[in-house]
Length: 346
Image (tube, rainbow, N blue to C red; front, side, top):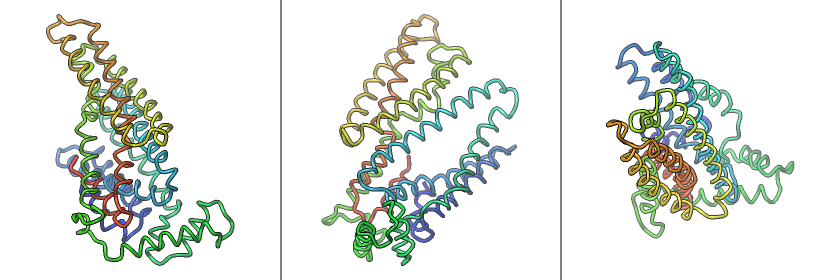
């Protein structure tokens, strides 16, 4: 949360690419401390650092992406971002399954923690070679650089093409409206209903987290083993398969977001998750592996509902909590609102 809120200031001071770069470096340091920890305090410090750096990336990437993409592409791009998140979750399940065979060694937990360094390293080595946000460049008075970026986006060799000039004029016009805007404007209603828009962004992300997705994502193997009666190895295999199906289901939203719209997919996801949770609760009760008197068929049904829950979440709530608020906030408060929504206590 603190990392995301820091972007309220750092995002405009250093630019999108540098904030993402710094976030990746901080994550590398934090993950290194965790993976090499031999004391609890050592581990906690590393955990805090990793979370702080991840906040930089979480709050900045959606803003940077929105400022570098066209409106008709934004929905699909955000959904792809969500699909890649589930790709990481899927990979983590299979890595953890592999480490199950090394559970007598500290490598069983050190390696999975250290593994994230690879991806943070890729970000740190490549992000500075990507285009900076043209909006940020224009705000800093670097119009010629912004023109180069727009030219690349338009795939045009003409620096003075109509589309490039129009893009620059539109950004300059919007920036002229932001001259007197600040953090305090987020908490005002007025004609723009800024506070209402901010609350929508934060509450959507809070609701995403309290939906129960992290319970299933983090403890799937434990649920399969302790509450559905699967063996330790089988529970990890099923959990990894669940993560794989989660990744595949997340691509549905990529191809449906512009056809069905934001609210319909969110409502579909909510309804599906609600039904899945009811089915999961009933089936888990019927499975009753603790007493040994439950039904093995009920355990299979419970596992099925966990797969279904992930599927509906992937379609309706995975990336939508970033995309839907973006359409609800004023352009002049875009960066501030993105950081505040990303910094919600969830």
